[in-house]
Length: 405
Image (cartoon, rainbow, N blue to C red; front, side):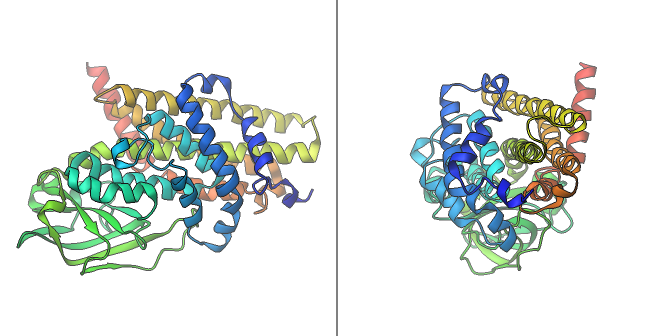
C-alpha cells in the first residue's frame, strides 16, 4: 500500500465525503438546525482551505496564518461573541462542533483559532465597552493575533502563585515578570496578562490587564520546538516595567482570579473538542487505511478495535455536546462536569490515536498517513487548559461535595 494514496486532505470532495461518513445520528440529534449549519460551513472551509495545508505546516513548522485567515474571512472566528463586536452570537455547542471540525482537519489551526477566542473573551466579559470595541473585532477578523499570559516558569495550574507584579504607576501600572508556554506569544498584537498587585494577597491579588504587543518593555523569546502542534507557535514573554494605563485593567483590582475561572469554562470546551476532533481524525484515517489493505472484509482483530474506537468516539461527542449545552443553559455550570468533559475527551484523543497506530502496525508510523501526527498533537491537550491530573482533582472534590449534600 502506498500511504500517500490514502491522503484525502488535498481533495476537498473526498475529504467531505469521508468525514460525512463518520457522522453519527445520535450525536447529530444533540445539535439544532443552526448548529448543524455552522458545522457544515466550518467543515467546508476546512476541506478547501485548512486540511490541504495541514501536513506541510506540520513538516515545516510554518505558522498556520492562511488557514486561520480562511476561517476568519468566512465569519467563523467569533461564534460565541455578540454581533456588535463582530461575532455571530452562536451557542457553545456550535463552537464545540466547529472546534471538532477544525481539529479533525488541522489541530494546529484549531489551537490558533481557540487562542484568539481565549484572548478576546476576557476583554468582552470584564473590560469596558471601549476596550472591547478597540480590541475584540480585530481578534475575530484575524487582523490581530492574541495571547493569554497566565503560565509562568514556577506557576502553571496554581494561578495564585504568579510572580509577575503590577505596581502602581502614574496613571496606571508598571508590569514586570515573565510568562512561558504562551500560545502565539511571539506574534501577539494583544496580550491578556495576569499579574499580582500584591503577592502577599495570594489569589486575591491577581489582576488582569490588556497589553498592546508594541508597548515598550515587552520582549518575546524564540518559539519552542515541540512534539506536536507544529503550525502553532509557543514562546516566552518578558515584561520589564511595561507601563499599562489604568483603563487597560480588566475588572477590579484582585478580580483576575474570577476572570480566569470564568474563562477556563470556555477554554476547556476548546480542549475537549480538540480531543474529539483528533480522535475522529485518527479513527477515520485508520479505517481508510485498513480498508485499502484488507478490502471490505477486515480481520476480526482490526474490526473489533475499530468497533471499540467508534463507540468511544460517539461517547466523547455526546459528552462534549451535552456539557456544552449545559453551559449554555446554566448561569453556574458544574465544575465537576466540565472537568469530566475536558479530561475524558482529551484522553480520548490521545488514546484513540495510540490505538489507531497499533492496529495499523508498520503503517501507523508513516507520516503520509497522518495518524502519528494525531498522536503528537493530542498529547498537549492533556496538559494545557488545566492538566488532566488537575481535572481529576476537581472532579474528586466535586464528587465529595455532592456526596456530602
